[in-house]
Length: 178
Image 1 (cartoon, rainbow, N blue to C red):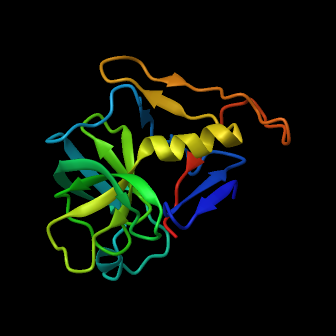
Image 2 (cartoon, rainbow, N blue to C red; image 1 turned 90 degrees about the vertical axis):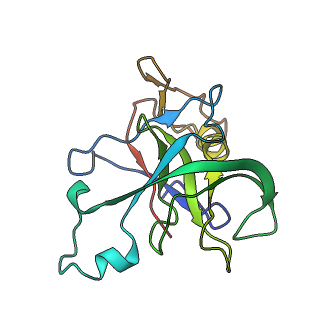
């Protein structure tokens, strides 16, 4: 584990090899962020769906995909702390188990990390805007691929911090729900 954040509900892992031959998702460029009324999707393994399965290992065929639109982008209190957070409010229905997973756009680029809903809300769900996660990855010198809408993705190569040397070889970074 490179880092984890209870407030943003994500962990960054450095893997020694790819996970079952999977390619990490690309992160949407911050200069062209998701906008109000854009379609977004939740990809994950929600608790209610996994209860029906009798296996302990999951593949992409086991993931559920839920569609919604961006209702609002704003700054407010994080669902898990009292810190101000840039959030994306969406109509994309979530269930326990989606939290910490990727919110992707129509191109499959990650635009946020799912947090959940407020206690009494059943129509609005929230995600942390991805630029907050990339700030953490950049500070750790973790490379990731940027998906540029209408272009070929590029790999970032952030400068390593002075206190901790980091390999420059591009390795997959996966997120996991806490």
